[in-house]
Image 1 (tube, rainbow, N blue to C red):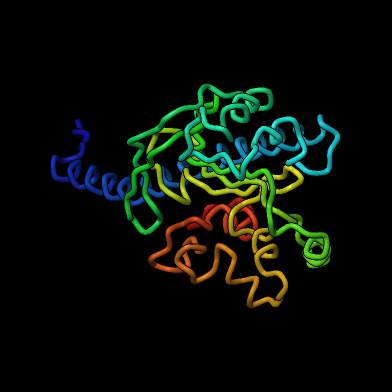
Image 2: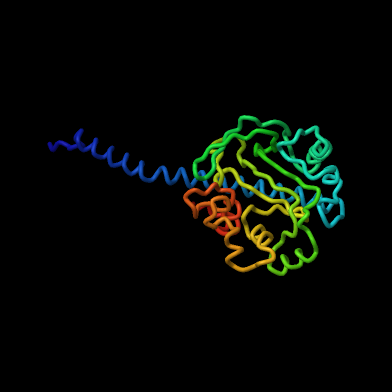
Length: 261
């Protein structure tokens, strides 16, 4: 009779070590890819929700500018922002109107919320926030009753240059998965602007760049405003000290929703 030979203990250990090494090499990238896919999906959903809500607001009122809607007309003096008292003059009647266009869980304080910039710098949010029903949180916001930079001449020039934002009606920062980590700019935290027509556009994106380039629409002047700029504030990854405020524009308008950074 011939005896069947099995694996020796040494051979089994070597096999396990090889499997462990392969797993250590392949699993982390897969996990990272899964996280990025999840963040992109959540960003798309919230981007659509916000765009639909504000554009519907304008359409329902049959006006050209969001400032003239029943909602924004409640901002009497300048703006309503997250650092203001929600019972103050500009926010008291404005914020409750948002419930008519968005599924909101609550509007109130979010003191102690910790977040990071792309460069690893930590910060703490103090003030109010808007928690959506899907768990996303608008951790800071500022809505205006008029943009003093708006005029027909500028709007015409911006439009001819390919821009779709003639004026700013607000800006806000959203954490697409709420209090869940990583709470980091460019990953689950993104900044956006609200146009006079109720469109939501990414911060440091194409429309942002053209709007701020006026009246000099040279390529160089436009590029320094984009998320791929070397500027610490506007950049996403092109500067080692990038804060990541421009990651929304870089991700959406430059990388076409591919988080390859």
